[in-house]
Length: 342
Image (cartoon, rainbow, N blue to C red):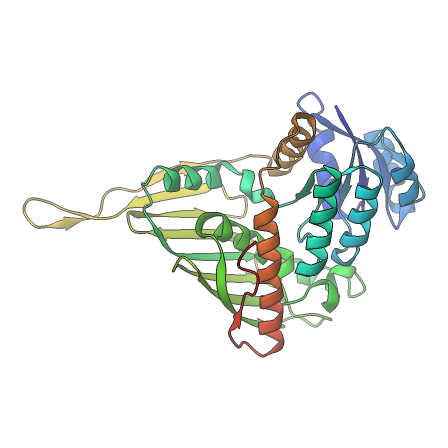
């Protein structure tokens, strides 16, 4: 059993804890310590989950019985907290994004590699069965070569996040909604098509607040494919991802990714009539992605193997984030992704 500490007990930190403690008999990771900026708000939660709430991050780092630290904290704190955990010989799980720029992300990855420790990033949707089905059809050739990908990821959070909440701060959410939700779609695109050559990003603000809430990103990949991501925290919650291949397409839809559709390309009948083959529809409801990623993190630690989201993909995603932020600052001009080797 991996003994872990959770740092940050906001909405998402509690969701990570619940994903493990609500499935105690199935879990290979147990949260035993917690630290948060507002301990008074977390006392009852920690008591109910049988987690010891401590006063400082240093207490967690000094504890020799803690194997891993899970960070559900503001993005700007990730680098310092992750480096401190690595220095204390703790494995680290960091909610996405790893940091807020490529330079700091590289520093964390290099420190973990030198120490022989796992650094995992919470791209939770990689573990969903719908994504696994897409992966299978891509690997066995049923999708063919991917030509284009179109993704949308939206939530309603701009309506109820307090103006003084860290998530509403522009420096915690560069390029609008991209760090909040869009990076998930980018991660899928990097997995299936590879490195991004250039990007164009446009942001907008539809709710009064300190940061933009809506983002559109267009991308050209080194392999020749194109990508389009629309993301927003100012509308109804939804997720959709479509990969268009030379042999068919895959569409994944709904907020829980439960809808999967594969459509092969049309074939000409002997009569010359072109007909569309029937779609293959699959449903994957009720899958716990957070439990799956925490289990994968525990496996990586226990078995000394790589976490399923390669750090090279994470670092390239950070290079793309740098380019997206720069494009938004320039008013939507095309910006090259400088780091194509990682």
